[in-house]
Image (cartoon, rainbow, N blue to C red):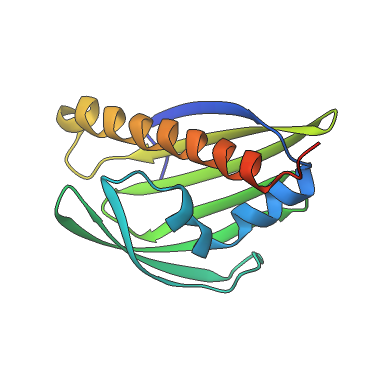
Length: 152
């Protein structure tokens, strides 16, 4: 099934690529970077991504419960993680986490492709919500790595 919509968001992080990759391969860390509107209630996951391995997230967004099961479909250490939704509120979901070394920092890019079960009518609402979540996640991830860095 071909996703209907796609967006890309990037940020530069003060951390080595391997550190950023390791942080993002562990679904338990989503609770550390989720905005207040997206509460992580539980995570069932292995802390290391491997192709074919699933993870389950129980979330609450704007008071609505979400049960999300994803599967790692590509793992290329330390540059790429791809997860796809197996059970999620969207018709399809593919999330590429790309990591590129930039000196002592990492350019992290999220590419999200998705299709809606209700057609295009809800696209503006869903797209705006996803963009807001990823903006918040990028800010929180940058703050996480700034606080994890040793003082000069």
